[in-house]
Amino acid sequence: MNNEPSIDVISSVLPPASVLVGTEIGPKYFTDWFGRPVPPPSIVVRPSSTAEVSKLLALCDANNWTVVSQGGMTGLVSAALPHPNEIVLSLDRMSRMLEVDVKAKTMTVEAGISLQQVHESAEEHGLMFPLDLASRGSATIGGTIATNAGGTMVIRFGMMRELVMGLEAVLADGTVVNAMHPLLKNNTGYDVKQNFIGTEGTLGIVTKAILRLFSKPKEKTVALCAVKGFSELVSLLDSVRNDMEGGLFAFEAMWGSYYELAISLPNVKAALPAGSPFYALVEIADFDGASRLENLLQEALTANCISDAVIAKSEAEARAIWCIREAALDAVGQKSPFVTFDVSLRLDRMMAYLDAVERQINSALGAATVSTIAHLGDNNLHVAVHYDAKLGDVRADVKQIVYRVTGDYQGSISAEHGIGIEKRDYLHHSRSKEEIALMRKIKHSLDPNHVLNPNRIFRT
Ligand SMILES: Cc1cc2nc3c(=O)[nH]c(=O)nc-3n(C[C@H](O)[C@H](O)[C@H](O)COP(=O)(O)OP(=O)(O)OC[C@H]3O[C@@H](n4cnc5c(N)ncnc54)[C@H](O)[C@@H]3O)c2cc1C
Image (cartoon, rainbow, N blue to C red; front, side):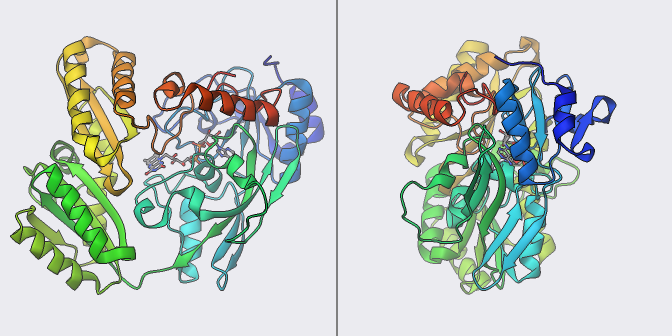
């Protein structure tokens, strides 16, 4: 039961600086990345310490008040937007860098720190944190842990799950769980931190984390290739992966239709002409860098796998190539209306899957086109389905079809972004009845009163 929270009671246990009400509540607490606002919450709590988070949650648990946690509000599945009567718990004041241990290659932070601040601090120490997203300026470590974020370097370093050594979290009843173990090897029973990684804030509030850092590569080389077909794209991935071993940092595929949209943006420069069926952005680190990649691309040209390629000669050129890939939302936004999907499929089913999506949408709704990009090495497709505006709002029909086809091809309906509210009704396409029942049991045992992010992932 979702009771209306008492501002007076909350204000009596927390310092005034931690509580916002009425006109003090700015739109950032009720608007997501897409700019879609919901009605403002009646109260926003911005704790400055774990103790304050604990106090708030104990109070909410005792009174059946519900809480939605917020980081940078860049999540793409509407999970952090407040529902009626929900208290917003924002980590925006818990954003301190606590320690960088250069020898151990670890960084200890509060959960509200932005990904970009983490990158900058690591760099100041000659190190790197290898999770990178286009939303780096706003996305927080708490949000990236809660969504088990991926990004462009998963092919080399894994997702957030692989990059968190330890964390501190507060349970729904206010219990503080200290799992801050800076140990790579720690097989002492259940790995407690996993309860909070990728569980979208439904099992606890992450307040601190110990992150793994890595040596910063001395140099990176970025290339863009025009690729002749999908099987050639997979061959190129294979040969770069085999040849560069741990040196391959990113392999991003762009379908020709996406590339054309991206390079028509005023702030995006075409590094290669349009017209190729596929483009691959390859980033490698060290490993004789440019010369090795140049040889490999020369071989791919000779083998008729690629038709053209360009290797960035400066940081600015490398950035310009990355811009083509990172402009995804702006690029597809030019061709409205559209619905975006973040799915994963086995490589050998990808093209048949995309054909099936396009065919089934066309037969159900008529003229639809698809723009696709992929973290290809991670089997992850970001697909935008554009439909005819004359059809009105057919987003729900498009989603039904795409998620059903994803299930038919044994894919995942969410590779990176989580389930939240947006994908909740389609979870059964990727998870069995028994898996969903187990998720419910875990939720119920850690949060029996459904205080934390209720009705996200599944209805509670
Ligand atoms: C332009 C753009 C590019 C993106 N690219 C990628 C990408 O390449 N790969 C990828 O994986 N994702 C990507 N994302 C989505 C990605 O999930 C988010 O950017 C990021 O992980 C969310 O962080 P946030 O701090 O904004 O969290 P929010 O959006 O504020 O919250 C996301 C979820 O985490 C919960 N949460 C937030 N903080 C905490 C906390 N401290 N404790 C517990 N739960 C918490 C919220 O309740 C919500 O369920 C992208 C988003 C954008 C806008």
